[in-house]
Length: 603
Image (cartoon, rainbow, N blue to C red):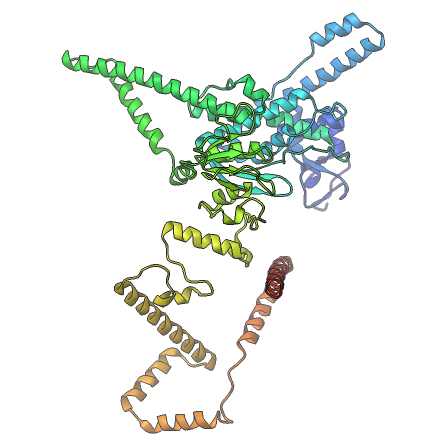
């Protein structure tokens, strides 16, 4: 009997036993397709892509172990109970038994997702790693309108808005924000919380239009789980900074859409209360310590007093250098926001970098006429009333300054001017092969702020050895050191070129060096004269020309491609195509820049 022969009805083997189609899974669990999708989303089960698709390529496959995992899920029984309850309510409504309908509405079964959150994320770091999509979804629904047709309730919108503001208030309070970028899709933010980099997208504060080709039921299922997850994360983060959760904010400021400012006031109030309480505790502990020393008895809470001191020092030294830089970036700066700028975003960003901010409207901490305001953020072509004691800039100035960690000059961002290009901090210009002109200018401003030395525009790294191309003041010792470094680099480069030439001629470097030493010892001038004569007359007919280095590199590259497998060769070709596209894009950008410069010169 062949090895892989199997009688009909016997146990399956291979992929047929490991994977199951979606229709088979729905039939096995005895649920509807919508309930199956909801279970998979809440449990974090995703389709698989087996190498050999037994039922064909047009099916969706799941692992059998995942389906067995769903079979024993308690939430499955609860969803079945909810389905039976909905049938009862519908049947009572059809019979017009309104008393039964009212009674059933009071007995609606509910479920909680707390256990699923703890099951999917055993540690807090795991939850932070998977928070990008969660924050993006919550911020999206916080900006959407409530639509009954799509089952988007008002309570869900308010809950998403509250969770998003609590998250932003924590990031702003602890100064964990690192990058921002304004795009057509929305505003990108990146924060660093407990060593984890978290990036999310928030939509612009505009009227949102709901497209018809989106399945909102699936998005609402994701949102249901993400709300629970973000609630757990916010609770843990607030507890880490000794704040009560959920926070109690001023209802008047909440009605004025100043939730982030209300949360910042809540933080300040709790901080003052904790400081007063710690002062009282420390004074009582100090008095008890003195009394115990006088009586030659150990105090009852000496260990607690020492632990409090250690915790205070630990909290002071906890922040890293980047957090300290962000806290003091907009220090001693006071900002005022006009009514046309994105208020919520700036109320989140400016305090995260140590600035003080107010706005035009009710509930503002200080009015527009305050003489201590240093910058006013406006986004209109003209400004009718101006104060001489402050600078009027566009909102892009704030984002560019904090992205590059340098206070940029405000000349390019004044009212009525076209601002410079808004560069993305998420793009590595060196890796892309094209460095914008404004990025180079910002790099020089950063070097000037750090008091570093950079070459002049158009000079390369090799020109650093020339004292005439250095910025700043260089003493005589540094000048000599730079010249010596340049001389050594030139000697090494010449030696490398000589070795490469000898390698192409087929001569060993050791033999060639011995021959040259012997010739130098003999000191024959005739050979030198002959060589000079040959150089003057040209190369002899017997001399073999040097091979083409480019052709040699191409041959070696083709030989290496022949030796690898076809799959890896296709992957290598795809990588080369991508690099070629990148080079073509960089070339196109340079051509456009050249045309623009020529048009400006001619105009």
